[in-house]
Image 1 (cartoon, rainbow, N blue to C red):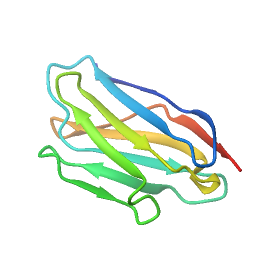
Image 2: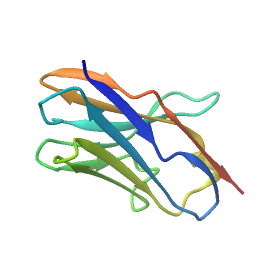
Image 3: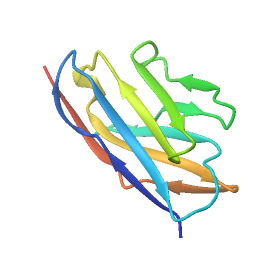
Image 4: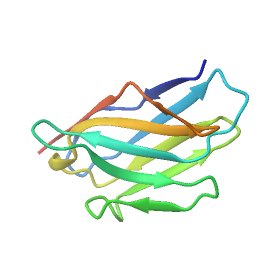
Length: 115
């Protein structure tokens, strides 16, 4: 049974950095595509960043130039490096991955950016 464990969230001041991790276990297969989403109070869920099996990345305009999605196939882990954080980045961040055409979701990790 595939399990995802997210980590790395926390409280940071504006301008600071955090790195989120999403590790998949319980499978012999490598992550195909992956994405990070976020959900802020009173807002709709936002697709933040995606990465394909070939390493092609895409970002929401709101985070371009500040966030970087990456993957480590040997560790079956996806990362989200977040720099120059702003208060409006405050949200619960979720990873979503595809393994053998099945989508799995992490439990979410809170990121709070203080001004």
